[in-house]
Image (cartoon, rainbow over all chains, first blue to last red; front, side, top):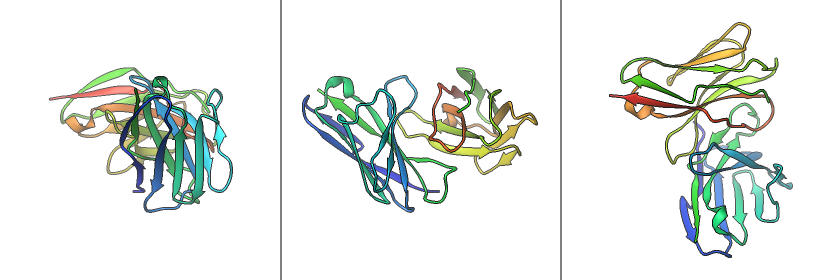
Length: 116
Length: 108
């Protein structure tokens, strides 16, 4: 099956710093990638849809200036949490559709962010 | 996207079949039924999906009723490693939207 990786797997940072999370499709090209966030004991919440070569589409309530998304190539999307605060501590998960296959999303292993 | 209703939790004895139900009475004609699962602290794993016919793969079987208003995911021989939260999602040409899912506990 299609493989999606994320880096780092976990990160601890100080309040006020910025953190970049990478999402890569390893064995397929992905025109579209998605970013989700999951708080403890809750379900995944879609944050934004990332399209290669264009601006991301953010879900209602998600601040686009705080969560910067870049999808510069068909295999890489990045999420930067700017000026992170403790309430941004969460499990961030990306997923991707293989180009030409809109039916199935494949998920990365997730990145656990802890902001102190 | 149509909403789904799943029981919050289920138990299953190891080695027995696990049957996870899902109601999706407002499903549209072009929407598929997807099943994913999430093992603790990992990303969701794709299991199976279908439109109207029953589907089977190496992981599970998906039974969709003729009116498409409900479906059942079947894990034929549950193992301890199948303990996870199982999500039933109805989806068209939009991203996956996750509900609360069913927490399946496989018991030795």
